[in-house]
Figure 1 (cartoon, rainbow, N blue to C red):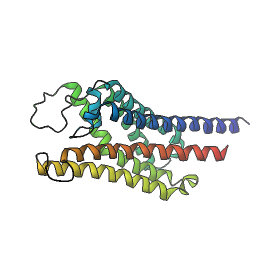
Figure 2 (figure 1 turned 90 degrees about the vertical axis):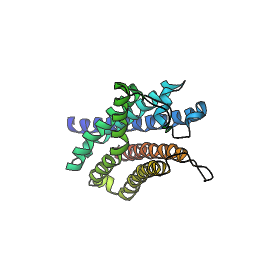
Figure 3 (figure 1 turned 60 degrees about the horizontal axis):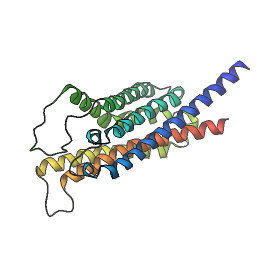
Figure 4 (figure 1 turned 180 degrees about the vertical axis):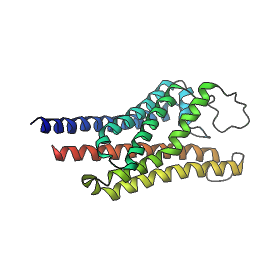
Length: 235
């Protein structure tokens, strides 16, 4: 009886943390939409989402990063017992690093809100450098972590049924990252804002940055949703 009770408690606990992860990911998405309307000048011309932290409503962007930190950590708690492979072990510790990086990005702000305006000289600071470091960890390593975690999850019989969907969702995060990198390459090749083309190169960077973060957010939601469904079916 004690063993059955412990299993049920674990299932309930992972269901709660999965719901928390799902809810916090949605909260990030909602906050970002609200900031899009409150701070329209930060939406285009090379501004990244982290620059919202330097706006009049900067606390909201910090809160959004904290939401992603909580979502990532809650998801880690929810699926921890299923990650029994080597890739899963690496992935869950890496996901913890991602969570801490979101937390750091919310605590430390960037040095400038000038977007990709290269004519403005920006003096680097410790807090700005830390923000950049945390941002680089999130941006360039998240798809790697997602790949490792999905590779481990699909080894579980209950998760294997959704393997195709999970792989496609993970592939979408790679597309998000590649699109952002490609937009930076396009901007650096053109050097200056483009005229007479369908979109300003700086705006392309802003759009791809938001698309990338959206794919990361949706990945967290999809995994949390499947965990909730699995635990609901088991209860």
